[in-house]
Image (cartoon, rainbow, N blue to C red; front, top):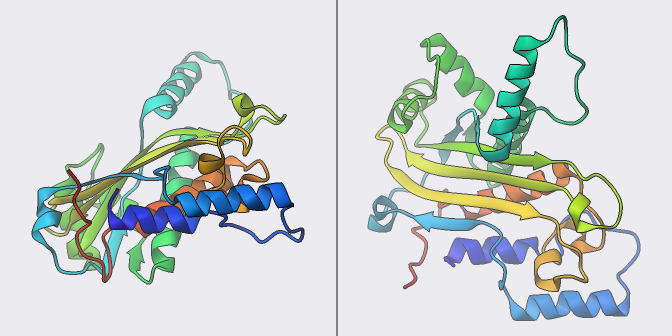
Length: 255
């Protein structure tokens, strides 16, 4: 794990909203054990690419492109398209977040988290408008997105990502009904579009009793069930903290 991953993981232990009631002795002991053992669980799976390892100028202005769907979410979007094409009249809206809403939410959470890191962020809405202006009807190559983001917004880097899962908690005390979120992002230089870094956040909430090292990282220290929104926001925060942006340098390499 690189230096950024370590920082992000430690920030996640016991993070989140402050509860009014202090944890009991057992919970406090488990959380302390997780802190002492350090980052045994990697929250954001990261990869640095050769261009980053060569060294780059700090990136202070970044644009977040509209996120795509992948995995389970792409299949759900396709099923919705098929059902809409064969239905008569307006189909009733299903409960929960649609694939399009999920991708927009993750992109927004990440933009907000990057802004909290002190970066000048162009949101996915603004990038989407520029893509519509140039008549982009489908996914563009990263170098094209990077070029446009630099020309229109002065971006030094661009974040491109996809969301593979956004599953809301269904209730109960079983992990089978826990919230689950999976998204992937990659950071490119602008305007050249050189790939610098990629990260994957893929989490289904675990209970404190089943895995203390995993669950104690969550907002609330794993003492309560999270909604998909809370899990996604936390994942965006961890991802933003892991990115080699601002005053950071290339992550440490490991054999």
